[in-house]
Length: 115
Image 1 (cartoon, helix red, strand yellow):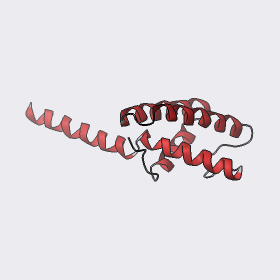
Image 2 (tube, helix red, strand yellow):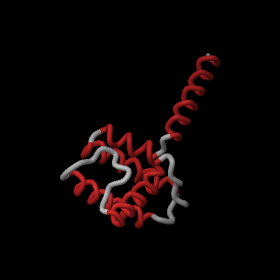
Image 3 (cartoon, helix red, strand yellow):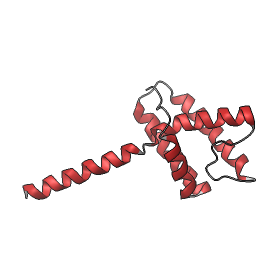
Image 4 (cartoon, helix red, strand yellow):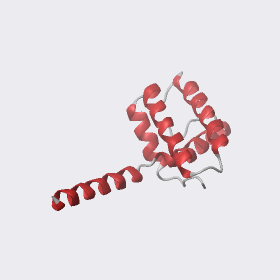
């Protein structure tokens, strides 16, 4: 019985580590940096696979996220984490899982918000 519980604890720990390595918390920085670059250049860089008319919808979605992030700035990291999860789910619905995964992976190189 103890052996089984020990193995379950190890599995949960490994899952938590893999989830934290692709944490949606850093999506705050991705949204901010992507919109800043788009506003400065008119280009979506790095482009996660968005093209044509989808670019306008993508930018509009990110603008709404930036507003929502501004409303929770100064709150706990959990607020940013919850918002990041909603963003990921929304991107998956509108633009597909591949785009959401690309954004999540790219965001991991960015600094997390100060919370």
